[in-house]
Image 1: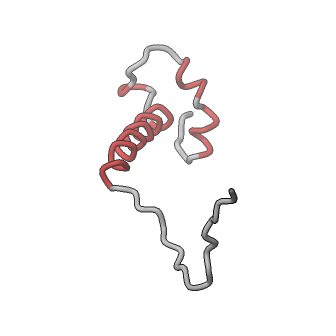
Image 2: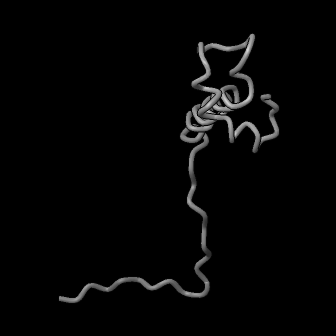
Length: 73
């Protein structure tokens, strides 16, 4: 027995999928905090504001620091 599948017609409007705002907010907060932490390590992790001792973090983000316009030397 063949099943009948309804085909969309020209009069069927295309509706965007509804995504509840409550499902997006935690991800926006998570990625916002992640971006701020990355920005800190690229832009300010050096000198008096250093959280990590030594030059390791500076060397890892050195090129990104120049690419984003942060002076470092």
